[in-house]
Amino acid sequence: MSGPQCCSNPPTLDPSAGFGHVEQLGGLPSYVSGSSDSKLAIILISAYLYFYLLFTIFGKRGIPSGRERGRRFIRNLLVHDEIHILSPKLRKLADKVAAAGFYVVVPDFLHGDPFLFENADRPLPVWIMDHGTDKGFEEAKPVIEAVKSKGVSAVGAAGFCWGAKVVVQLAKYELIQAAVILHPYIVTVDDIKAVKVPVAVLGAEIDEMAPPELLKQFEQVLSTKPEVDSYVKIFPKVMHGWTTRYDDEDDGALKSAEEAHHEDLLQWFNL
Image (cartoon, rainbow, N blue to C red; front, side, top):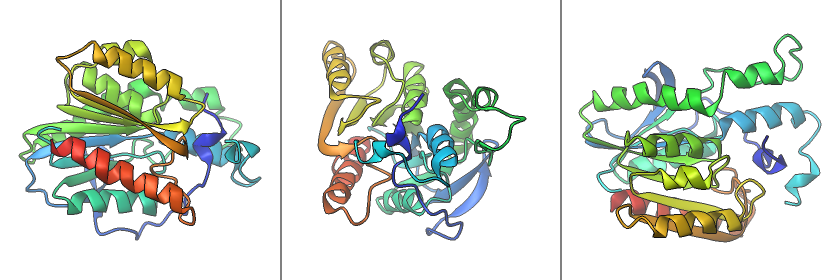
């Protein structure tokens, strides 16, 4: 199970945020931004499962103390983040990427079905069975096909936290052409060994789910795979989730998020 870092700095949801619109793609409601004339694609998928879980559990009682403890060919971007398609920061990221020439899609893999702690008829173990990474992997496939049907010739993916596992699965089966995983969760060394497409790993120095020691193991494994272009970077003084749940009043966190978005994520997919 994820830790308290996954629910720090929860967003205020806003259905009117952003420059894009919501439409159905691959059977999922999706926030779409950018030109549909783009011919190359990326998918960003994230930790929405655990964010929803922990925010629902702790939201009315305050965030727990852990908060304080705590490329190629790519022009079309499908973005799913741990915060939900109504998150202004998520939509801001999607719009920012779209402004760089990408077609951006943010699918709602939860189907509007967050975990409700007070629903005794549907306890957590039952709810999780409906929202696992295996299901996310399967549901990403028709989204990719829907984007390709618009004339897209190649697809890449970036995954945040929970979504990193989905992206790694897509990368294993070469369903995408490039990948970025950010502050990953439940991604293993064996997962990285099986990746077959160019991959960038962006991690946090303060991360209970993907500590620097694990990321260095990823780097070591990738160094033995010369056929797979790779890049591993650990951002100092930031916590798990910093790329999409940064504190606007924390200049250091904001700068690190911008660096991850522009200097690393966008550059990787533009190579």
